[in-house]
Length: 222
Image (cartoon, rainbow, N blue to C red; front, side, top):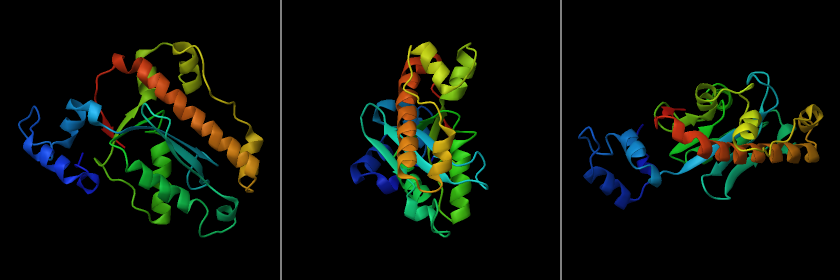
């Protein structure tokens, strides 16, 4: 992963240059080592999206949420009725803001994000000609594979894992009609979907903190 010097202070850049990792390289050269060896200094976010279709060439992003680790703060954006009514806008502004918010973090935690959320956002970004983070720009950990590999439960869904490990889940059950009405700009449905997304990232954080100690601290790129 490349050191994000664009959002680091001069003091932080100098510190990274003057300190070395276990391989003998500066942290500017081996920023991945810095992320692994100095985890308390990371800005970690819990990420989820909601979309109108499981395939990005047949659907659009409706909203996203990124919850900051240990804080109430959630970066979020939901599509608007006005955007839905314009062919050349649709989810472009949602995708654009999502990318900007992702870049505020060092590491993103998702649930099945390596197979759905990130490929979906990347596909929409390419469609709109937006600059999606490249390989190595952002560290990623997928809790789905932690659950699949370290637990033995009937279903590996987020809700099931939370109920088994935490004894509860905030997750709201999907109302298909809300997704249908959302594409028409129905305000109540859009709010419902965003609320659903917020609950998912809060559950994701709790589950991650409960089971992270059972896996090796290694990250992949988004």
